[in-house]
Length: 145
Image (tube, rainbow, N blue to C red; front, side, top):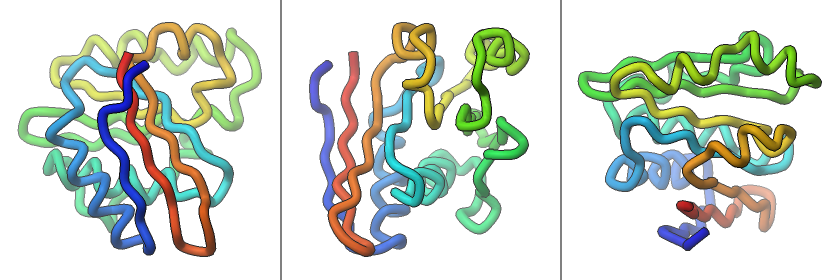
């Protein structure tokens, strides 16, 4: 994987702003694994990604931990924010229909906890990693295959 973009953010607002900037890199049809510990700011980053694609306002983006998939439709792209934290088996993973979501026109999939499944890792187009550096300080990196 090659490093495409890096950010250091010092607040949730800066993390959202970094997510907005990813609209110049992310493309329709891509699936990105979103890595980071609990509380790292994964959903906060997706708020910015959704805003960057005019798919949702930041206040309308929430964690899909219990729903598993949230869909944000923009004029050209649809952001599918997927959370696999509560998914434990390949059989459960199949019920989400990731292949179907990915084949939708304009789809961009951002998958939290995708590293739990080899098939997600091997099919992804890259990863976005968030590392906690302090209370509100984060290191965000985007790598593409």
